[in-house]
Amino acid sequence: MREPVEIVAESDPDADALYARARARTISVPEAGRWLGIGRNAAYDAARRGEIPTIRIGKLLRVGVVALERMLAR
Image (tube, rainbow, N blue to C red):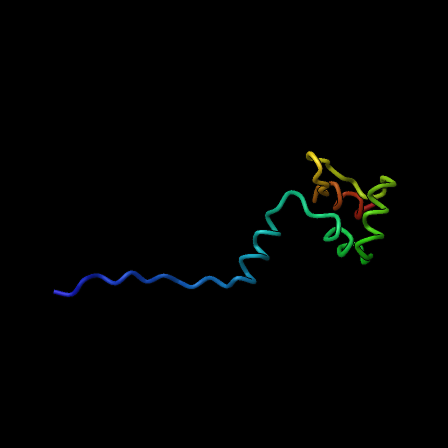
C-alpha cells in the first residue's frame, strides 16, 4: 500500500506580497509617496507639514491607508 502524498501548492512571492499590502492598514511614507506620484523625500516633507496623514508608533512613522484614501477622494 502506498503512502498518501501531500500536495502543497507553491506560493507566488509577488502575489503574496501584493496580498499583504492590500490587507495592510498602514503603509510606509515612501509607499504613500508612490501612491501620490512623489518621491521619498517629498513624501517625508509632506508628512512633516501634515499634508500626508501619519501615525507615529515610537520612532516609526506610518500612513493610515483609510486616511490616505479619504484624502485622495477629496
